[in-house]
Image (tube, rainbow, N blue to C red; front, side):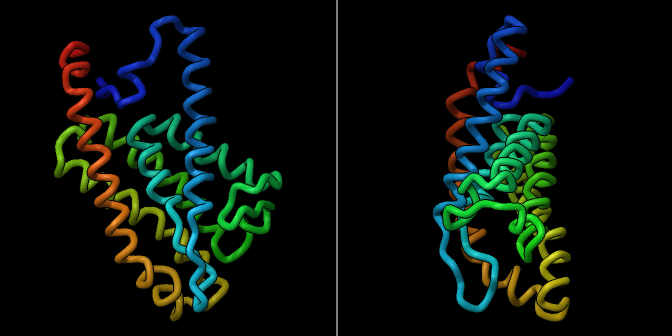
Length: 196
């Protein structure tokens, strides 16, 4: 049996209300991801900016679980491709999905699903499990991201332009994410005990 993720601990029991609750969470987290994208630092030597999107994506997976977490990212991407200004720098359009950073957007979906899957095993309740879950999700973002970026800049330059400049920032975001998950685990410990 899957361990309840944080959203499940406060999810209403009535099915009709629960569906509305799930929809609101998915829409809400798509907006959180969009807000994370607006905190962007462009780097002059690479088309990939530093943003807080990754942190928001990982927290979506941990909070909502694999299905709702991945769906929140998909909704975010659809919003952006439809032209809403939710991508980094307040931009939108399908060009972002087809451009050099499109692979990272695909990686966001995979990362939210993986992190949500691991959270559903109860791994994020312990501090080491939280660290490993966030790290795994972060690395999953880079797989399609670097493959797609390499198509544009050359595979010999992909790591230099799409990975190494972001290692320190990703480390800091993982620390923040770990702190948030640790706090959430402490706050919800009693609710988890009641459900088990």
